[in-house]
Length: 146
Image (cartoon, rainbow, N blue to C red; front, side, top):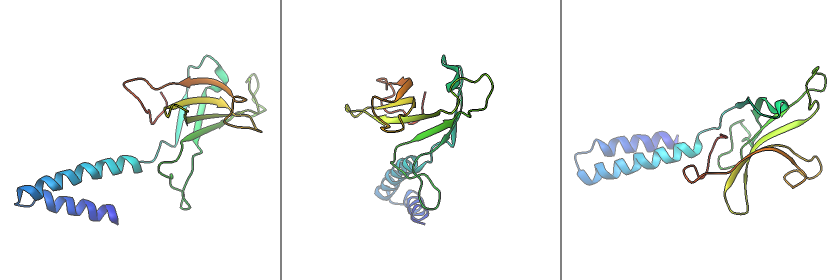
């Protein structure tokens, strides 16, 4: 309801006859777009393919925090999981749960990892990291894995 009101207000402002109100309306449109980007839900899944370690290839489903009504919780850490079944013939890595996640490092940079988390101490150096992606100068905070 709030965003509908905000959008309606911005529309009234930009169609006003007053130049200061029009300019303020366009500022509101810009702010509305930024707010919408923050509220945008992440993708439901990612497909990993062509990995050098073949058992990490597959579909990773969203496992991040959700609200009580099932929606993505904005500003929370994003993560995805893939469980490798035990009974797949010829598939190495059976029984493992792999996680694709974005982690905030001590430097405040956000890196992407594809890891097998340690069951007793996840998020430590006991995790097995298969891939990592550091941000580049052009893409300082990738919201999606590369």
